[in-house]
Length: 322
Image 1: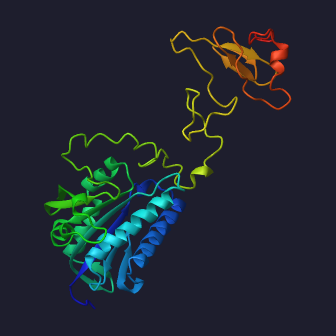
Image 2 (image 1 turned 120 degrees about the vertical axis):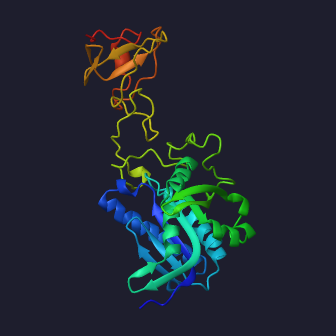
Image 3 (image 1 turned 60 degrees about the horizontal axis):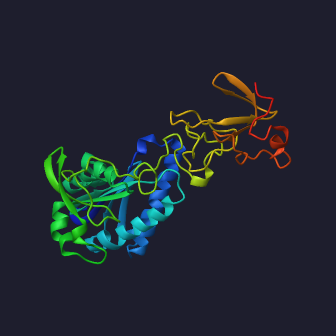
């Protein structure tokens, strides 16, 4: 039986790119979101019995007991969410990204769950294309979008951990028509929103994983960054791999002529064959400078690190090349 409409603080939490998670990774992702939310509510002094939550597969919707001031959710709870999420993301190859919608309005709660126009609004705000773009172009992992009425009644007055100047307005097209919403990106003094110069240009570090979405693919799903495949192929240039490590000897592409005039002298010993410009050399292969000056060898094993120099002609070559 419906208990009647009561004004409550409403939340909608969605996960960035949830459709690309594999099933096992999605289960762990959902558990991580609930751990973050419950720990943050506890730190904000909101008892579990004062929150009604409903799962949405890639997040949840919630209504908070009307005895909890909305500024407590906007301030302490959001601050705790941000700090805990940031700490947890340090150990993930694929960073967890969240879109959080907030609104206060009348909501009905019966045995089937939450309903009402206010609940529809907060869900649409969190899932809107503009909210997705603000998160994407911020290069960060959390975006908060609040309704115009919540901004007017609560945010603009400030409060503990609520800084009004950190919210920016933008028009958002919803099914019912366009509305004004206010955006906040924790960690940013003033988030970029549509209409700002350069908004459509992603931040420099957005693909590096430093503050952005990370360079992980959907196939990686998630997991500790140090747990990546140690045989991850290096970049074609022979430089550091996508993980930031130098390629192991014999694992990367050998340097090629880039047209700069640089040349490589090749010294080879018995071992694995390497094909270079249709010529086959017995490896491991060592590179010297264009003038033939000896360079530090790529290490092989402890007994053979410098064997090639004894066998060579002193100029970084051996007679075994063919």
